[in-house]
Length: 69
Image (cartoon, rainbow, N blue to C red; front, side):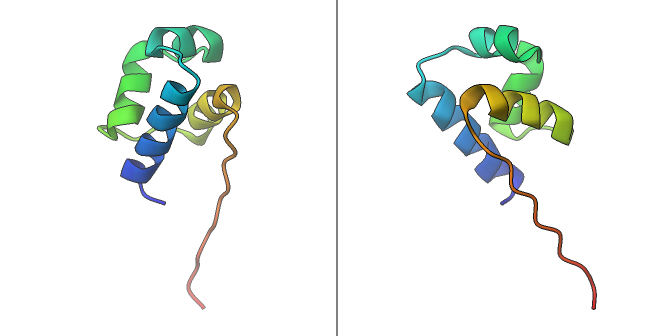
C-alpha cells in the first residue's frame, strides 16, 4: 500500500465516522496540520503517528517487509 492509498483510507474512514480533522486531532493527539498532510499524502509520517490516527479510526496497520534473497 502506498502513501496515496493510506491517505485515501484514512480520509474515507474519518468521513464515515463523521468526524472532522480537528476532532480527530484532539482525540489522537496529532496536529491538524499533520492530519492534513497524511490525508493528502503530501508528506511522510512515522509509524507511531500513523498508529495513533488509525487506532482512533478503528483501522489496523499491517506491515509487510520484503527483502532481498
